[in-house]
Length: 131
Image (cartoon, rainbow, N blue to C red):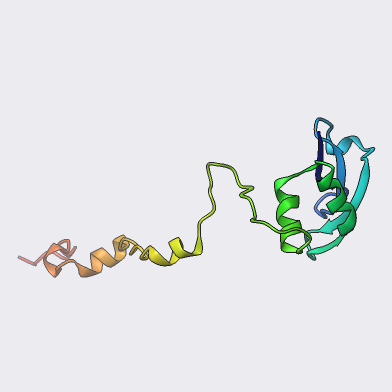
């Protein structure tokens, strides 16, 4: 089974990726991809993609990784819906849901509570009356 996915080529703290076609069972770090289809720089969001070769490999039955699928859709190389690449524990939050939930008021701090308390609760003064 063939897959189109990223292969990291950037150095530490400076990521850059190749878009490659390789066997699904092989690690992308193993090298020797069947074909290099382009490159992607996530810092500048620059993508260089061989559109005709991507379409060729998809026609041959190659699957797309989730992230590459979303990249190709955003660059209008292919059509379709983006897929959720986040883990199932953290599903994406839609903008509509964000707007509908009212903001929750934070509890008042203890200093603010003490300022609101009546004056009767003040501790007795250190001065003692003279006898």
